[in-house]
Image 1 (cartoon, one colour):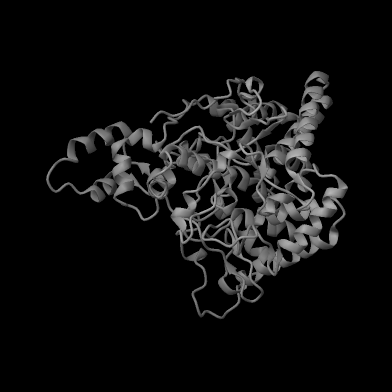
Image 2 (cartoon, helix red, strand yellow; image 1 turned 120 degrees about the horizontal axis):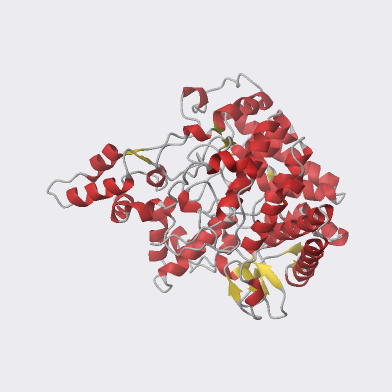
Length: 540
């Protein structure tokens, strides 16, 4: 398999001077583990040498990768070859983010209360979740960064794109502004180096991004005494070019990578991935999903799975077709159609990005850039009003772009245009009523109306969705509903913390005291947890 060029947008910029020290070192090999280890990678994943498919791509090799592959090719055909022993001899797995007795959750039946309150517990986690560039294992899949950063927790021991914005909210509340600024500079470095922010800081994430929140990070950084957001205008422009690559050449009804031109000539965006192979961190799962859809080309299924990973909502009924009656989870997931869906949240965040570029360019005295991006923002706003706002539903709905029909199932991303100030006051009022009627539950804001075996569906709730809805509603004067969502979410997090002495990545939003950590999806519930810590700490 060939790695797509890191800067597929064709835009090239020089690294900012603040990254000069990092650039003096030779750039690390950005080949992904599947490219490096070829048939060895496939054998390790197929034979389930590790219970979690993500473990092997994250392993640190104990020697040069090409020498390990050569050793495997020489030994694998020998009688009695032991693949597990070979892997143990040549690779070192990474430790979970909060490994050790100091961070063990309470065992079932333990009745004692935690020794510190929730605020103190979160403040104490930042150091445990912080990683430093000099700690990076040699020759592994981890991308080199110039500055310290915070990881989410559990199996996620690298920096993630959209997770980090919500984590940074907590750093601001806890007074860790220097670390917040360092993380913003890390994201600027990634855009300088690769032309976009990868999904996460692993080589196998380079073919996709995540919801574009760098503009929000720059604003947060500026508001916490850091450099002005104007400093990051070159990176904001380059990120925008990544998302809009190929737009100028599209005729109505055509799509290229992340851009779609609709029948009326309007441009909107979708999620995408430049590769159409199984995700390396979920190789076995993706192969099994494609096998459950024998009528579809495997590459098409893999691309849609990867595109859903770019959305951050991996996985949800939001991206699925109609599963056959009586189908199991894999058969339902095999109906995934992410690349034919134009998502509300992505387009709202790109409207925010275009508007912010226009403001900063005007501040810099670049009137031409300001006019161009304000025109793009205005055109996107009009396209969202025409294609994504649904007056009958009282909500923003995703669009099936080949059919040009709305996806009628409601989900919490419908609140993103409030967060980005894209909605009109009338739309905000209508949406507030819809959220209160359809998605407000005992523990906060439900992710979707549907219950499924996927983690981005009911009964689960997620910190970033609570934050964007609450901040958006408050910005439009819907303070009562915003306060109710915030209070219900904090009670949920507090109830689980009191019982289990931990924060987790997602929560089952049941009535108290039945609230618990969430479930579903392709891996177990993870502790830590970056964005839960960040949103909760900010609201405390």
